[in-house]
Length: 59
Image 1 (spheres, rainbow, N blue to C red):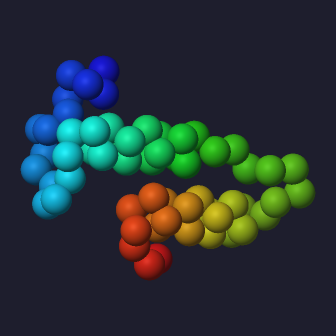
Image 2 (image 1 turned 90 degrees about the vertical axis):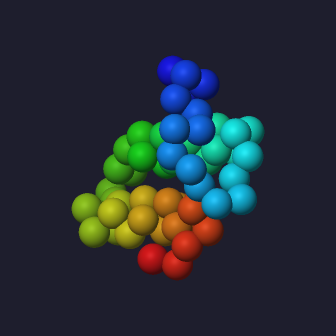
């Protein structure tokens, strides 16, 4: 499914291979589950921080 939709959104300086890797990393991050004993705010912070790392942004 990822392959089918690669390149539909033009991202600056991003090859199709890098776009594919970015999508896989985002999907992995967004599928994370809250860990036992982890508060909702801590879980949300952890996910936001990981997305920031994947996107190379500061959140």
